Length: 246
Length: 264
Image (tube, rainbow over all chains, first blue to last red):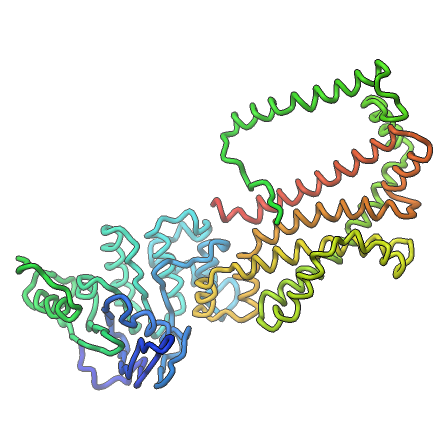
């Protein structure tokens, strides 16, 4: 990855505070997301991950501070959230505001092709498997060619094998479109497999910010990733009974 | 809140058909008993005409065109009243369902009016609108508006907030949100309201046609009554029932098509 000095950030979070019922969830938070950077955001439940994502998605406003995002932001949620009453192709089309109906349909089809769902455009979402629905949701997020792609634990409900396939798919589409990506996850290995940079959120602030420079595909047993993993787990407060041999 | 039959039963088709057959026995026995009671003289024709006479009377009314005229006029009344009541009910429901201000303004009076038995307003309607078509259509409209209002508001409020968030991140405008998310999501409950309101529409028609009617099925029945023709009276009631069944079947078929997405 190139040095992070040249490009201006895609999204910035400046001194953001957000509290719910008097309890601060985010407290003087600062974060820059650089174009094309894949950032994983780790944190325990209640650390403010989802709150930060909602702020970046424009679903919430900070009590103080500033959130700046680019013109096109897309979100893929933990559950696919396809509208069950619209066919899969129409669901993807709904992300598009511009162009004629035919243009939108064509773009939706090619986005579905990119996630391997060409033949599912005209079926109802209820007929998709969990992994297919999540891929369709990713297609809906990608079809707008976002500058910032927010992924809110999108793989956590998938089985282990499907998750591996999804990781490869995300890296593939990310390499092709190069949006800035913020991936919210609670899976340290997932973060280390995918991200250029891993951030740990704790008590509403960034407690750890690690650059991961290994080339992909990554071997999680390589010494530097093992070291990163230990630092991240320690920061997350995970107590390991004795050393785990790699 | 009244409930309606489920969209599909979970029984396999063969079993359903068999059960259907078994369930036909007791009505047939009752019909036969009715016929026997009449032919043996146990049930005088002035009280209740036998089934065969009812069918004969219906056939005569079909042949001389009286039935078609009456049904045409009654159906027109229901259609006019339904269209009026449904538009008002759904419009108010959308206004109340979409904004807090709309809800505060519309919902309390609607909930209060809903508890009034609307048939009780008939004398007032006659006073206001006279005795021609207007009070009949108004009574039907009033009966139709409430079940549709209540179920549509319920459906709109029941929209999963996650879908509304999704609509926002997708950048849908307010109109698109209504068309693409809120109404489709509320549709199952709107269709329940539709079935209930059509039931009320026919019921309101029957009541409305009791007052000073010179046409329609109600006139057929009251005219028959003044001549002691129990066969024509029962025939007219049967027609009311069949029309109700027909509109219910219509809504069910709309449900099957419009809610296909639930089953895939």
